[in-house]
Amino acid sequence: MAFKILIAEDEEITLNNILDTLQDEGYDVSGTKNGADALMKMEKEHFDLLITDIKMPGLSGMELLGKIKEKYPVTEVIIITGFGSIGSAVEAMKKGALDYIAKPFDLDELTMKVRKIMDQSVLKKEHRALKIYFGMNKKITLIAKSEGMKKILNTIEGIKDSDFNMLLTGETGVGKSLIAKVVHSTSRRQERPFLSINCATLTEDLLASELFGHEKGAFTGAITAKQGLVEIADTGILFLDEIAELTPNLQAKLLKVVEEGEFYRVGGTKPQKVDVRFIAATNQNVKKLISDGRFREDLYYRMNIMEIFIPPLRERQDDIKPLSAFFLQKHLPKSNKKIMGFSDEAMEILLHYSFPGNVRELENIIERAIIIEKSPVITPESLPRGIRVLEIATIDPDRIKTVDELVKEYAEQVVKMLGGNRTRASELLGMSRTSLWKILKEE
Image 1 (cartoon, rainbow, N blue to C red):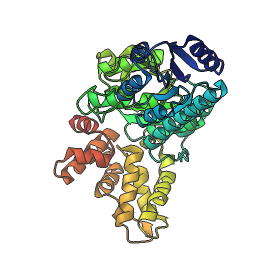
Image 2: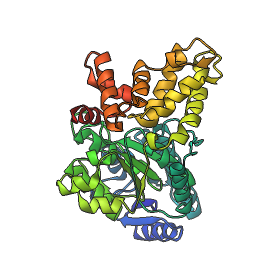
Image 3: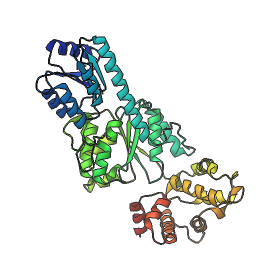
Image 4: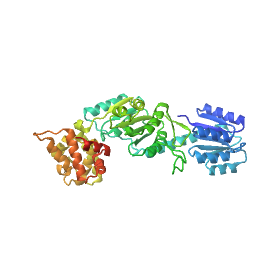
């Protein structure tokens, strides 16, 4: 997205010289001859930088600066002052101007100041992105011993030079967010921001503000303007987890970004232009949601240029042993214990368990076992009792239970163990409360 600059200068020759020079440098530049027109332009579209003469008829540059910093604090300002008016320049910088230049000035000097501000703007955006990208660590570990995961990695390798939107599907806890990071780390945007948000965790109003940002005064508590994740992720990738939880209103706003690369901040009247690649994820049957009128078909096809289904852990038994070893090494340092691995009996139980919470549940089980275990290896006694009970039931020759029966039975046991606290049970099982409720409801 081009760096947008607005020039407010009442001297026509000076205005044209600045416009021509900055346009030749590749900037998106507009010009006005007075402060009032500049303010009107700012109300209609976003500018990264305002260059304004300090003395203009009507609305002066100093007055314009005050209004810009009040309404559009993220827009930087360079003040143009007359010779011998350095005092006014200092006053302008106290009111929020980033820099000044005195007439008569060298256009090369102005170009250097603009380039410096643009570079600083890019760094600020990247810094905000890094603060949001938890961990800020590009090292990604993905266990892929099973054929199902190997196929997924081969698919990602085959599309690394493409730039289309993607939809990741699969049960809760299978690793959709991890796959999204792998796609980012191998894509053409790997050096650009990777941001993520869970669409199921916030109310509609809060989610709208997080995604699209808001203007000052847009609602109670909005004391300053704020950029949203869509804007911060410009040139990078935004991962939308649980996209099926978006309300119809937010689906419509997201569709506009996906189709046109344009959106409005909450309470805003200026369109914001962005270049963002979207990766979405869901554990729901989106086509059923479309038939039920709960998800827009046009948004589905815009997001689903390619779908990658991530199989549940119970269908990836070859991954259980290496995943268990990985989680053991991951959490062991926090315990100050020396645990060398797993007993054959403990690993056998893990290999035959159905893992309704998938990889997330396996990690929780290993972390808990490390805390409880007192011997040099993980033993069955340090695994949750429910897993051991289910292992016996699974190999009962008189009646082999289905996976769904085992999942429901284990979920019921966890809820009972927690005194009926389904919220806590869903957290331990690594699934949403809605998913747990559906499992318990099934006959």
